[in-house]
Length: 104
Image 1 (cartoon, helix red, strand yellow):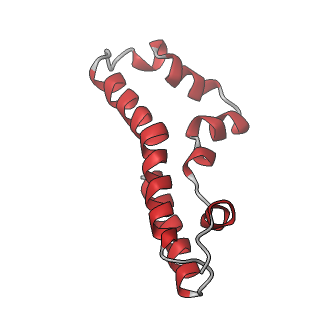
Image 2 (cartoon, one colour):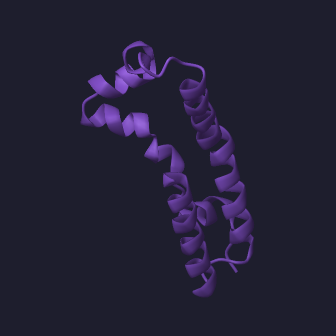
């Protein structure tokens, strides 16, 4: 769900830049490419691992035997941020136009 919210935020940023004339329509392609890559590299592997974890494990002992779930239980606040991976999910559209063009 977090990925979907960040998708919407990045698209909103791209549309604002386009509307303000600070980027060309290429920004929409850059948005699509960057979000797709994040899905392939981050979201899909995590989702697949979570689904596998739930379906291939004994649910009664999973919390005690699964290394990932154990790491969540023992992590401090900084560890929780790393586990969540929010930094890997976000895209700043302004950064994409700065490095890849996209200006009118």
